[in-house]
Image (cartoon, rainbow, N blue to C red):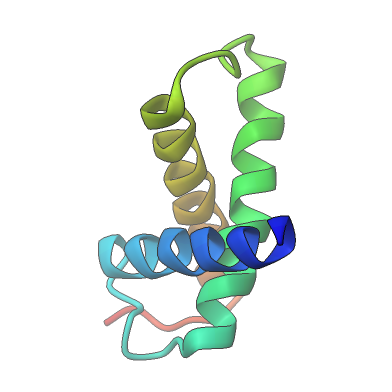
Length: 84
């Protein structure tokens, strides 16, 4: 059951990050889920390095979105996503 919740939250995080980075038209459901999950891991890894990983649900959600935005930025720099 927890992996289903992870997929749903990953999809929401990836979708919100794609709206922020204006890549929503280029990404489908699977890409949103992958970017959301991998971006969340990236965000929490960076937050752990700077000592900011502790916090409530809202802080964790913001860290997840920030990590997904960073991942989309990196993928755009590599040429995977185009600027809108």
